[in-house]
Length: 113
Length: 114
Figure 1 (cartoon, one colour):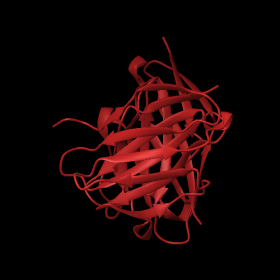
Figure 2 (cartoon, chains in turn blue, orange):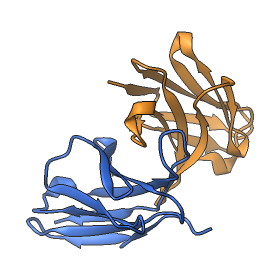
Figure 3 (spheres, rainbow over the protein chains, first blue to last red):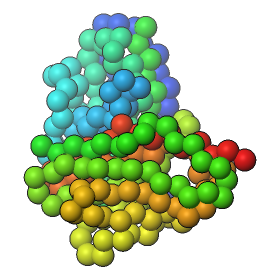
């Protein structure tokens, strides 16, 4: 069974631009979560989507948004990029919820210049 | 609110020695606890998890962890370190009502010396 895939793997953007990251979960998984990983703040939860609905949201500004499609694929969007948005963005999928194992993708490395 | 504290941002052991990575949590409700490993330029891989039942949990690659409610701890151990264990390890907590949301500790970088 194919794992979680994230595209693109690397991205360089300029301050003020916007970016869209994509995540394809494992087949059959309905929950997709997004995390931001930085050296200073560590791993922080962005949001979770389950059956196309946002089920949970972390403490990030409204510039960070996401959505999930009917095939469970998810995208996250960051508008008006800031230098501090440079990070590794990780996507994780699971069958349904907390007690189920979460499988992480390799991440998208975003650099904002 | 729930939180996770990992004691020691860097741990160094010799090959063949015991690995002990410490994790303490705070949670107002019974937690679900996880250990993940991250190799350079990769995502996170689940080593083991505790949800309910037996408090000693065995995971992949010879790792195990014990849930101790009285100490609010979930330390990760491996009897004999291998060079391939060198990586960053994260302890995480969630709870029934938080969906798939994981709260992670700061991480512990494990170095294995030959």
